[in-house]
Length: 345
Image 1 (tube, rainbow, N blue to C red):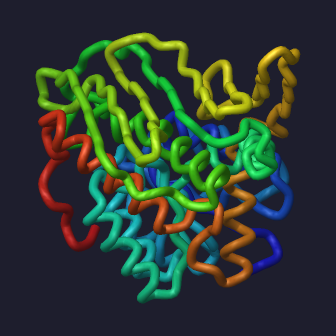
Image 2: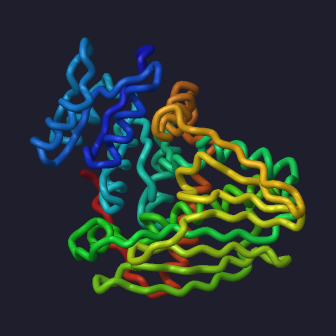
């Protein structure tokens, strides 16, 4: 590995531009190559993000060629969920570190295969749950560890947006692993586990799970509301959807106070600590660039240290969240995403 960490990117869609912008503003790294099925789109992406005075981004439509490039230090996968498994597994087998968009894959079983591959190869793998690395979440973690809200009693969150129905889109197509749970519910569940771990020191065993869903005509989940019971009166509730609007807040309630992320909790820069008969204490922690920079920096730190997972987003957390998603999907009768993945690209 050279002193400048070189990223390759698979899937030059909208989210890939956010990643490229964050890389541009981080020290010690650059975007080296991009791979896309549409050569014209990949070329446009490369032109947009090639730096003056630097070598132009390498462009290819062949993932195998990208993974064979000895100059690639890490691969960021930004394709639809249904394509993550094949690309991530091929990258790991090629010895390339992987940062893969959430949800890592559609099912826990598929994630377990990738984790086993990463462990067998001794190669870094991380699901790109950028929320966990944001400055405001680090502050929330401190508040919870300090006991500022007393004993944790309940959590509530929402992440919903109304999307036009298109059976062929990544949101509604089973072949592309569509559905609200994999696209946005993954944030509700990650936030739930983040809070539980920092408030209690560990995530308690899930005692009971109730879930209700609305299915799209394609059979994927268009909206899900769920209640997770951890015993001793501790319950986490959430709603996620791609067919409705919600305030998209996170509320963490204790017997001595509460923590509220008042808007778009998954990309929050503001948190409020509320107490009875006291004014709210508000912290504002804006991003340096767009918020992706923190997870990218963490991935590079781990890779350079020879680690195969991040303590901030370990393999066990990816498996646990997908295990919950599997159970909730089964409860609401949503269609299982696509067929079993192929073994190679």
